[in-house]
Image 1 (cartoon, one colour):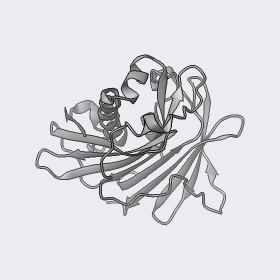
Image 2: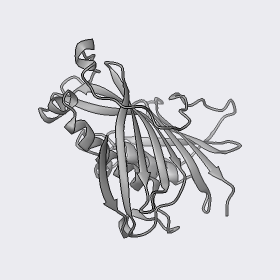
Image 3: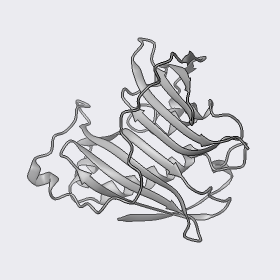
Image 4: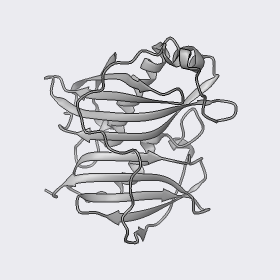
Length: 239
């Protein structure tokens, strides 16, 4: 298990005075990055530039809002590896030990040259350290779209500021885009993100909104019509 400490500040909070969901994911990503770099198998591949990790799916359950200037503890570990992909548990704890958020992540190891998945030999895969998965509901990594047609919303243009060192829009920035369609005052308790095709700076991002009984599903497509990402928000009744 890898553990880091992070203190919340002004830049982590939104207009509603709650911590931005993308900021929570940023904290999780920082912890995951340290964890993978410390791994005896994955670490050398990442540091040498041979491999990259692409996020395929992320589920975040929010149980308690972090407070302003609160020191948070972030913990993460792999709980399953299958040569091509890995599954990871991550939690955020408040200063008092309460569980603020927990996350289930599926990622794929890809070649930095070809951007194709790397299929590790079984004997190499078996050397990766894992620990038991945390206690939470593990949802299907494929988000089912409603049968009814959604509403196409005004498009965004992906910017360089949203890109990470892999050159594409970072997975946490998709959450910033999705949050635009969350009603003011809604308390999001679960967020699921399925990542299929990466957006690059300059790409047109076309959102489609599907209201559901528990929140909303938002798809992000490109100009060619390819479905690049699907996000599901579950929220409690508006305050």
